[in-house]
Length: 223
Image (tube, rainbow, N blue to C red; front, top):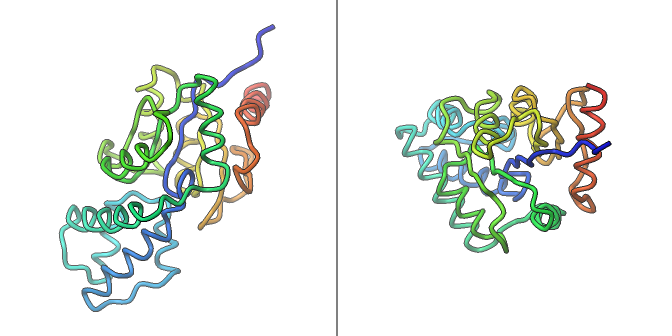
């Protein structure tokens, strides 16, 4: 009997592959300050995992007098400036990506960052891993809506329910779960509630493709 195998791995980016959340928080703080406002760490945490257009509207409510698209482009440019100085890989992320690549398992990047940001992070990897990228400006509905994960699976030619999705935030986990994927949460700057509809790991460090396969088989065998 052939063992169950995930058809593909769907990856969130910010906070999952790269710990860029501090870059985003610093950019938000600086932008709000330009307009005379105050942006706290607690304010920033509420936006982790959210779509950028939602975040832009929240920043407008804090006094940033710019159109939504301009807020997004400004924040993205500020974060990219920091990435040019250092790409902050999360522990174990590159190693797991390398294992997936070596075993020819299809993978897609599914992020709420806009495409130029997603492509820059993908380019920073030592190999071309992702056969597809779904960015925040590619979808109508941001996470926690499942559209982005459904689109990522579609671009790979597979069903989302046949994939493993890796996420770091509660909205991201909710999005992936709603798509039907087997979901692993790696919390960083926000809390992922324990639930029977996803698995939580404290880190990707020391994890391999075999670990992803084991979670997938467990979930699909018990389904």
